[in-house]
Amino acid sequence: MSQFLPMGFFDQALPVVMRQQGFSLETIGLVYLLGLPWMIKFLWSPWIDRYSLSHRGHYRSWIILTQSLLVCVIATIAFIDLQQNLKLGLIALALVSFLAATQDIATDALAVRLLSPQQRGFGNGIQNAGNYLGAILGGGVLLIFINQLGWTRSLLALSISLALPILPIFLYQEQAKFKPNNSKIGFTTFFRFCRRPGNRNWLLVVSLLTFSPSMAAGMFRPLLVDIDLSLQDIGLLSGVVGYSSGMVGALLGGALISNFGHVRSLVYFSIVQAISISGFIIPAVGIVNLPILYAVSSISNFSSGMSATALFTLMMDRSELSTAGSDYTLQTAIRTTVALIASAVSGFMAAKLGFSAFFGGCIVSAFVCIVASARLLNLKTS
Image: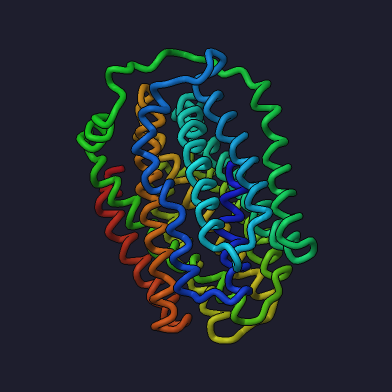
């Protein structure tokens, strides 16, 4: 939850604030590229697996360090005016992204080691629900705070929120079941992962199922600004109500995975997510009725929570315990890279095609990618 507090701000609140301050769609789309550390975090993930900062917990020590630094950087951003010091603000936001990405390596590795294959479906549902809760607080709730309290006070409140979870992290006792084989940890880890049967096809599946939903989601919030919704309405609509639906979807998806199987769940949930994109066309054609918009946001996030839970579960299935951080991070880095690229180009495509045609293209692309993914996964025999 605490890890996604700053990322909720980065992904949800910042594009809305920038749009309200007059930044162009093209600039907002390119801002998503500040998530570059999430794209390349696999480069330093082997060293998170190899080195421990404390004898009281290998991954726990990395989580405490990155969490503490995040508190300091977010507090600094509170005093930066983006309109006057955009470059400085972007550098600080990039540092936030780097620290959160590094923490993600450690938390995911810990989760892979803790969860048995039978626990991974619902375990990922709980973990993904925690992500949504962090995004609610860092995105939707923070937008409401910015609207009421202003930039500085709101970012300081976010910093304090990030400081609170450090105490239970200190109290947590990490159980080291075995020490990693350092001779096998390094850049060769990635080549070994790609040489395992089916893994190259799997990475292609991750890319295909990520691209279209990320493009559509990247332009939904700027669209809400263009139809003259207030920051408070957007915060409630997209951040609070929408992400609450995502939490429910993540938990339900985790509960259903054991019934459908890991692979079938991914395909089925991805189909539901592709259908949900059609709801974005409603505000694009000028229908701005708030109850309808709440339904659109809720359905979209609900389906996204289900599909993400299935995807993360299969990522764990393809991670070895001895290199848990590296294997899982490589997969999530591929997913994040595709998502950021899709979000970056979405602004240019929406500006050229118009919102209605843009979302229509996202729907068609999503279904084509699902069909291709089902074939790559050999669904009939899975």
